[in-house]
View 1 (cartoon, rainbow, N blue to C red):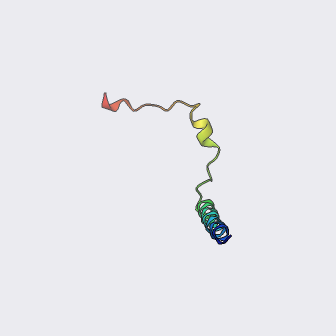
View 2 (cartoon, rainbow, N blue to C red):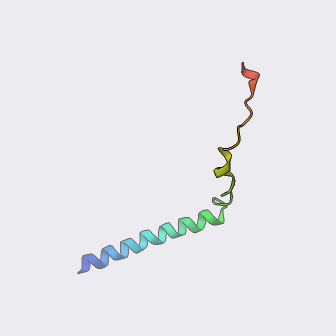
View 3 (cartoon, rainbow, N blue to C red):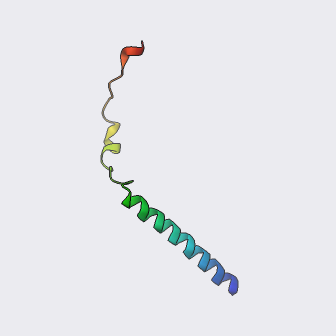
Length: 52
């Protein structure tokens, strides 16, 4: 029974760590640009021909 309590505490600690990492990434702007990556593939970028 004590192993279950130990594993439960460890899993809660890992979950709290992932939650803290998620909150930190949201506050630092990691998920701000959610529109353009999906549409970036639709537009062709102009190639620089100076190296040819």
